[in-house]
Image 1 (cartoon, rainbow, N blue to C red):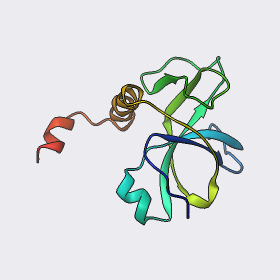
Image 2 (image 1 turned 90 degrees about the vertical axis):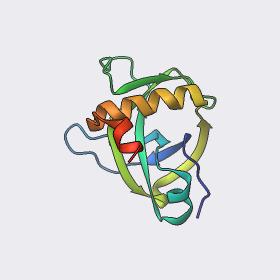
Image 3 (image 1 turned 120 degrees about the vertical axis):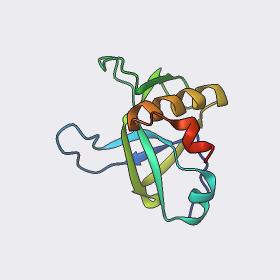
Image 4 (image 1 turned 180 degrees about the vertical axis):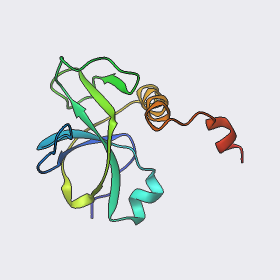
Length: 121
């Protein structure tokens, strides 16, 4: 099993998409924490697209990580749990500033209104 870390980008084969789901192979960002990644056969990812036609939404984060061919967008409305067997080639890693922007977009995507209260008990 691959040792993967939160913030890394891998090619992921999503298989056949249905409707607006991402299908095929796409770069994807690992969202799951490192402890979960170490012990679980699954991980949580967000799809990344290089398409420029995507509308700018508060759930989108523009990135230019090493290994990506073009400026891309992490789609935090396209979060999925996948088996690690779907992970393909390692592409790169986000810096901490960009990962913080991803965290903010996740909060928006999941509708977490009282994050500070959740974190403090």
